[in-house]
Length: 227
Image (cartoon, rainbow, N blue to C red; front, side, top):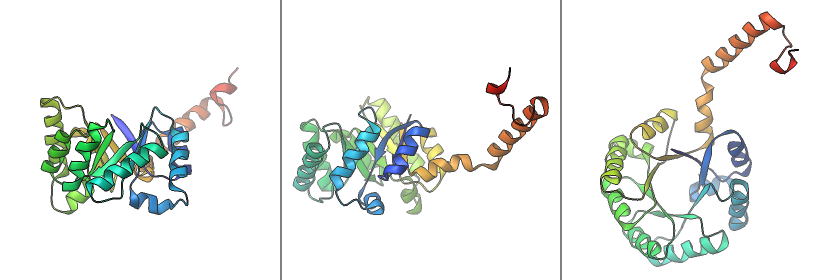
């Protein structure tokens, strides 16, 4: 299981890496717009410096035609590093680009997946990660969990070397269900992951534990204060 975060905000990334078991960082043009760095590649290199090489970094192309996608992918690798996963939308042109990039040994995350056949084509083209848009699929009347379940079974039955990284969430329940239905990874905004801890019962349990402790050892006595 991999927990990735969907942000390029440096402060959010620093905090998430410190507190959470973060396996990587993903971005797309809409996420970039929220932070709007003046120097995009400098900013992405700062992210790499924060997360290190052991965590994955996923950066999306802008071009809509295969030659443009390939050229941008190579630019990303040149200006950041060779370990970046290049995000390619699974369009007709995108499938062609994925095939070309995999022939060059580039790591690819196939994104903007709404349909199972889209995912199958990206899988066969060699994509390393496949990113179904969970909430958006649901909003369009589809069943994102059925898609994830079927895709996970196909990966397992045919022994593909690929992972599902479920994306596009409105809340924690969708994240949990994606993992339960077979996604090997998820990428979510930091605020969605932090919402896990908004359950008031967690705070109440901690308060009750502390109250019971203080009844025995006093209000200001922690474990390190015991003689």
